[in-house]
Length: 84
Image 1 (cartoon, rainbow, N blue to C red):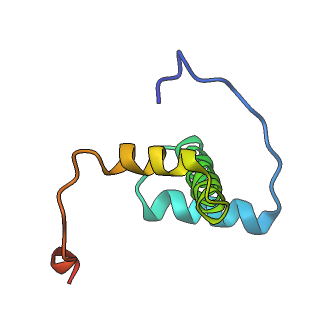
Image 2 (image 1 turned 45 degrees about the vertical axis):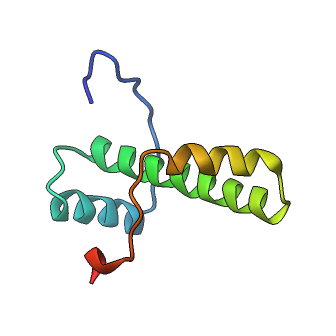
């Protein structure tokens, strides 16, 4: 993240969450709290997208098939053995 394109946002956290943020930053060797917060926000975005895709699948939304096809495009078939 470059500071020239970053937007400053002030947040208030409980002492418990502030400690966790600091521990996370150190554990993952991030340069700043801002990087840790950015990772948290990205995780929230990914969670929201996953929930929305799951809802589309449950609703049999035809757009889900289009989105899924786009996600699969270019991926090789796998039997999962590379994860064992």
